[in-house]
View (cartoon, one colour):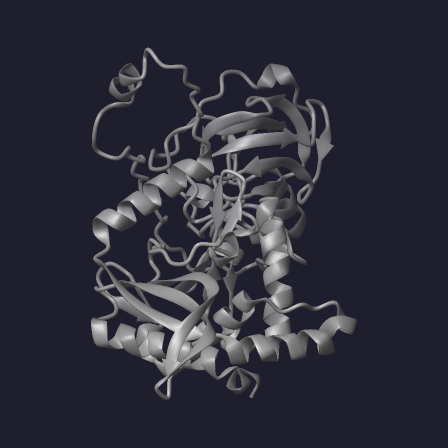
Length: 439
């Protein structure tokens, strides 16, 4: 029977997306693994693969359509011998609606998997088949392979949405074996994004009715930033710690290293040193290497440091994992790669999710100091200002030093004042004694 292709959930936080581009047209034959569309989430544009083989019978969602909810049918796949006349009226129950005794319709949409740095697709969370009498839900391709291998579908637990059996389930099964079934996992109902409390959009617009204005429609990224950081300021008890670091030794070391690394095409930035100093400090103060998880605190062993990167219309926070174990040149190269792909919205979810700590540097814009908003569930974020030649007192004498101001925004639920002070002091110590970061 005709099979629905559903809008996939391409990241753990995705609730809707934009169908940026179809790579197939009606009538095209596709095989499992073929890339059929590009889906734009709130953070990136990602490729979407077909799960089953067949012919694209009907495209239900046009290119450029925004706000397409996850699990909404976007196309219909026909198996051999079927035609467009078999499609009929397409409907899709919500994520928690039970399967009906109607002919099977939907093909499980798969989430992305990473293939050599490029986003592909990964399977949706595993769930057991939904039995209703003797009915077993399986894709046409899975049924055919099962028949060829002599495998009873009733003996297989499906990994597709609502327990549907897909190709890989059958290929991994052995005749005569019956994997243990588990109860179908019900997706949590996603709460709709709420606008910040205050005057309504129409009320605000009326204030400026007699002025020349331009309305900018919110895209997915800007909506997500508004929602997440609005919630962060309302729900996270921020407090702020401030320190300055003298960068004179660091600047000398940086100049020496950059001269030596010139042949390798590597140029270290001050931010590379800040990332490394933060990673090492998290190892020295392990209780601060933690995130808030609602009913518990989760402490990380490695130092996974997120770095804010400005992109058109918003920002990304790609994560440098195991930063404490990487050389400055490795961190610099990796950061440049992540930042470049972030600007083109080509990061996979695993590259911008996670971390316990973030760095936001506005020093290159001449900003001397600022307070950054914590990106949940992180425990802290370091706001880095510009290095400025400043008179300081040393040994009762006034000397000119290159001084950089920093502010550590801290989640008081995770890190108390004294612990935050230890962390910031450790960061400053590494920046003022940079040779230790090379050891």
